[in-house]
Image: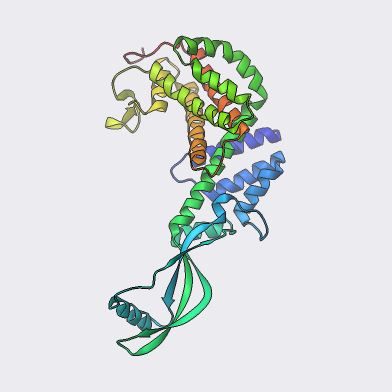
Length: 347
């Protein structure tokens, strides 16, 4: 019999795998997260997932990405197809057109409606009508003012929801799986990690992380996130010093379908390093997956924060630091920590 925590961990792991794939199903991910929050009794997050699935009732506070979905107003011609065509022909002879104006809507609908609108866009009648004179047919036609919302604005909303789900699940997964061992991890890894990183000049990042975790200043929490990302970048540069852009011993998206290990491919460099140091099979795959999850979770948080729509919180910083310390500890305790200057086929 699995405990509630174990069941939730399995669900969150499944969601992470789905959202990391090429064809993620956001509705299923929301439902899975709703179930996990029910199992855990996380009422606040349960409410968010329920509203994203079913919609936000009138009077309920909306998240920022639903408050002002941008659109425009337009006058359209009513009547049969011939009337509309005649109106368009008449418009083509005019020297000026009535300009459209911007508008916005509160998006309270559930996920099904948004998924549909992301495919077709949405038109909202305003109830305002008028008449329009068609000169070459010498007649008046009825027109109506509408609000038009292009499909791209709803696609952007879906992307924001997906990013929020990914960040939440990544944090929840880390907290449930490693949270109770936070102090043990820091105590077990701290000496080894800090000694080795000091030798290669990366201890400054750790100082920033530790100072930020003790602070109540949101800017310091933001600095923790940047340092978590930068320490993975800098460590990858140090551990992988082979000058070639491709690691021929693993499949990837580089030249000839091999692993790209060029300057900006930090995760791939660490993957190649693990392979060179003999950490292959299930252990190597696990560390690679954890490194990717932590790295992209940090990247998504920093991306949201940079848009000033969502701020880094102290739990965000703590979760990122925990994951980063875990990866650093595994890399530096399971290997000799010596850089690969020129790779070779493992014997």
